[in-house]
Amino acid sequence: MSQWLTILGSTGSIGCSTLDVVRRHPDRYRVYALTAARRAEDMLAQIAEFSPRFAVMTDAEAAESVRAGLPSDATTQVLAGADALIDVASAAEVDQVMAAIVGAAGLLPTLAAAEAGKRVLLANKESLVMAGPLFMEAIRRGGAELLPIDSEHNAIFQSMPADYAGDLSEKGIRKILLTASGGPFRGRTSEALKDVTPSQAVAHPNWSMGAKISVDSATLMNKGLELIEACFLFNCQADDVQVVVHPESVIHSMVQYCDGSVLAQLGQPDMRTPIAYGMAWPERIEAGVASLDLFEIARLNFEAADEETFPCLGLAKQAFAAGGTMPAVLNAANEVAVDAFLQEQIPFNDIPTLIARVMSEHRPVAADDIETILSADAWARSRARETIAEVSQ
Image 1 (cartoon, rainbow, N blue to C red):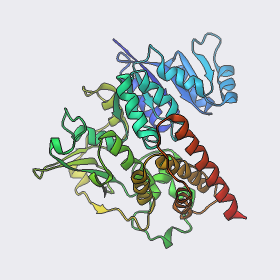
Image 2: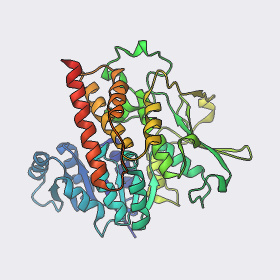
Image 3: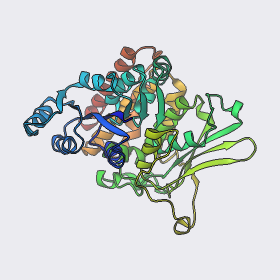
């Protein structure tokens, strides 16, 4: 029987890779809903191929463009707005939800999918960064399945014991080794990063990703957010996770055991592998990804992360240690800072400076409800924008 799938963020890189897996397995998966922000032309192309029941555009004008571009005999219903995202993520007919909306915008629909008991394919790390305890409780309360799609967390998941229930020591786990490519500026000094451009920052050496995630990789904030995500996914502390820079991006992460064993998941740097694994788990299905040629790779390199040159990783650790609303503030300030850098309003090295300043002005409170989390998110965004305006005067 086919599984019905909603893809939150279908026109982004993760969404497109997910649709490629669907394309390869038309008997296993059917698309219930596709969602995007503004890419009307891309959405129209996806509707033409996959004929979803619903297409949701968060931008109202984009939704009108999609409606106008559909043929008269189209069966897809076009919806608009954030509430529609929640509706298609929690609809009774849906079996799986690919949560691939980048940033805080993905939190509410992903939370709705968890509360509705779906298989949540989590590629939106901000859901856990902003609202980790709340989100994990929603997974438990809703009886949902949570499958990590980030390549690193998916690798950790594959390297864990099958019956792992949230206690590292009980399963003889000594440490989680979270790998990082090091981004495009690995090995450079802070001085050498003063004048880097947005086009240089988004030129990731191994992965094809959107602009925001690519900049996060360049600052190592992506690894900081992933560290926080790993702590919630695997019920551990920041000290249980070690970041290992591995520039080849062949080993996607590892788990170190007390008997001296280290289990690793290796593969091509292609997101279709973890996507297919999450969609079919516990089975494995063809994903269109070639196997590794170990002779071609020849060697693998590892080094420690440079937290002095790339302080965003340390800021993420501080935010997790502070707890409460601080991770949401970290995430919000980072989103504003990255956008400002991409718009050439601030230099690259000002990204962590801006985040640190906003964090220093925040007094975290318990993140017990979604309203408190969203309030902290809004405050941090406002304060970050004010700070940018103050500096530019």
